[in-house]
Structures are given as C-alpha cells and as structure tokens.
Image (cartoon, rainbow, N blue to C red; front, side, top):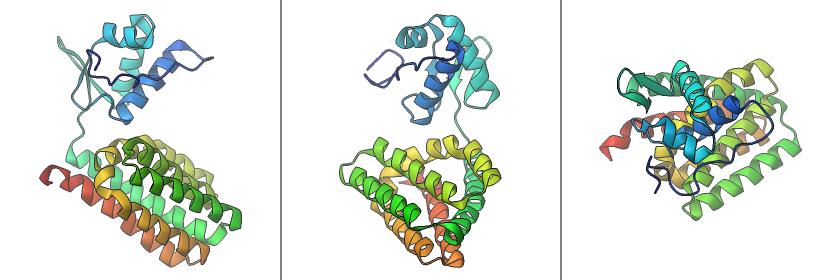
Length: 225
C-alpha cells in the first residue's frame, strides 16, 4: 500500500500525447471514479506527483479542475480531499440517470438490429464472468460498457451527450454496491436484452427503469447492510 492509500499497481500510466495537465487530470479522475482514492481521502500534491512521475504543478492544476467539477474539495489550511457525496447528491444523480437510460432503452428497442443485440449479449456474458470471478472492477467496467452500448443503440446524439456527463459519477456510485448487486444486475440486463430483441419499447423502458432504481435503492441501503 502506498503512503496515500493507493493499492500497488493502481496508478495508471499517463497516456501520450496530450497536455500533461490533462493527462494528470484523467489519471486522478480515474483513481477517484474507481475508488482507488476513497471519498474523504487526503490528496497530497507531492505524493501524487511522485506516483505519477510528474512535477507538482500539473497535479495542482488537475486538483483545481477536479475541485471545480465537484470531485475534490479544497479546504483552506488543510489541502485537497476527495469529495464525499451526500445522499441527496447521489439520489439526484441516479434519478437523472434513470430518466436518461429509460429513454435510451426505449429507443434501442425501436432501432437495434441483430448486430447490436449480439453485442449486448456478448457484453452481458463478460459481465457475468466478472461476477463469477468476484472481479468487482471488471464487473463495474462491463456494466458501464453495457449501458454505453444501449445508449449507442438508441441513436440519439443529444441523449448520449447528456448520459456521458453523468457516466463517471454513475460508476463512482455503482462501485461500492457492485458486489451486492452481483448476479441480479446481470439477470436484469438479460431481461433488457430480451425486451430490445422483441422490439418491445414499453417493456424495455420498464425494465431499464426498474434496473436503475434497484441500483439507486441499493446505494442508499449500503450503510445499513
């Protein structure tokens, strides 16, 4: 375990090319999203710079940007800390997610062809394998890819853009409940694929709404578990 609480191997390699500050920002955001950096964790510029192999300046710039976007809190005389989302923040975000994804499911049922349905089935199988292997990170990643594919099949660029704005926070909230959702989440994905394959727009909407609501309720119930 590294001094900032990062698991060994958790620090992503900085992709090139691109402005260094942007690459540092993406690396830190990924660490926050996957909860390698936990909510409330103190972020020490010098330590993060050492882990990423950069100077403190791009780290400072990245932390300021993350603060503006609500991922990091900058506290006077204390430093930077990973933001701790309130229950209300999570509820609002996950409620918006339900609205966006229910509409995406309806549109996908109206438009998806056999290739798109096959892609969903393949993603679902990969997700199920991740759950079987107790690979939480893999399950979270496959869940995001599955939902992104449904959004792609919906064929609405504006809807996709709106969904992209909340996608990373959805992953952030989903990660701590992924193990609890487990196989049930992928059973619901199978039900959604069946509705899309049958071109049943109403059923697809209902399944996706129920699916995202289950995740929302599980998130709120996590502290009572």
